[in-house]
Length: 256
Image (cartoon, rainbow, N blue to C red; front, side, top):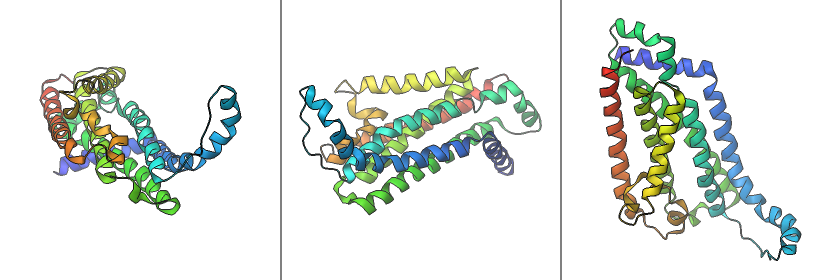
């Protein structure tokens, strides 16, 4: 455990030096503020655009803004934050290969599985912290401006998106153990997301893919019950664990 703790500390300090924590912190805070701010400004923006839209034959009726509008913005913005996160951490193992820093720690007796677990824990910690920041800011503003009780299945929907993030992080980890470039890692994560999204168009697969957990509008409105997502939760959790196990197996056999 001492080796693992020491390597995690090294990884964490390295990420701090690169400035990733500061950049992600700013982005997650910014989006946390933007969610309720965008919702609050929506009627004003529509009023400004109403004349131009009227000339095009579109009539704008009065728009009701509440916490549900803000949470809709939250879940619309999270995929963008997740993309930025994946791109920023796509080279978490690749740079170690390129610099040759892993050779020294492995020759000193550090087990390879500890390296893989360390990378997973670092990415999970950053994702968890950033996600909590955005959620906390949005939740706080919504309490102040409106009433969060209007959003049904809120906690479950929030946890669902968080789990999708962990799934994509595990894909990044798996791709990193087999790939030689950060771009290949990013493309693999993107392909996994697209494949899951495409499978959701088939009724027989819809409720079993990770991206089903991103059905935020239906969950918040109550048109989808949280119980309908339990299969997707179980399968996504299984995929995360499987990706970590496969990552360890591949990395153990990879030439450093």
